[in-house]
Length: 239
Image (cartoon, rainbow, N blue to C red; front, side, top):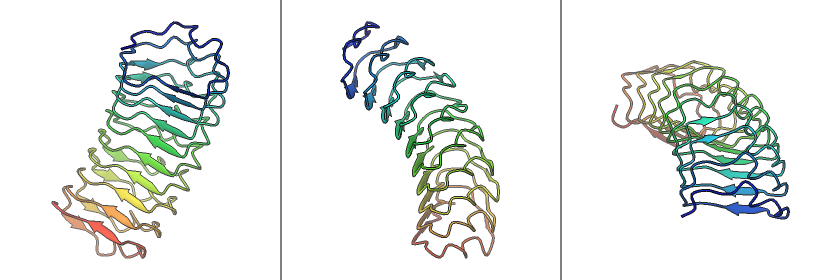
């Protein structure tokens, strides 16, 4: 298993477009490691022991489109770590040890898929998705989120699937999902919701699947689902 990589190992590999380093024992990545990979489009670093992502690590990767960091031990990602990755479409950070992701996607307006599930995220900065107009799928399941503020998802205009399963959500502001007019799938199962208000899902006219199973729901307002004309599957089990 690879444990370390010399900082200059890829210095002359300018034509490299795909790099896979999965299933090794890499713990640290030198900030100059990928500096010469100006044409790389995909980097896979799954199943290692990486603990942090520094600001300069991906700073030259303007053509990077897919980045996968799942199953590591990442506790911190520097605020501008993805700053120059303007073409990034897919990012996978699931199964790490993140508690706070700040505003790390501020310049990544090309993202279509974001996976942050299975971390320890307690709070989502209301600015994190400010420029995410093209995101179609967002995974936030298996974290420790408690509240969903009305400003969190306001710019996710084209999102179709939102995964919030297995958090600790007990409160959803009335306007939280209002801008998600393209949403087709919403999973809020295994949370701590107690009441479903009439206006929470009112703007989700294209929603086809809604999972509210395994919460603590005791009250559902009579018109909570009346605007969901496209709804095909509704799960309210074990409340």
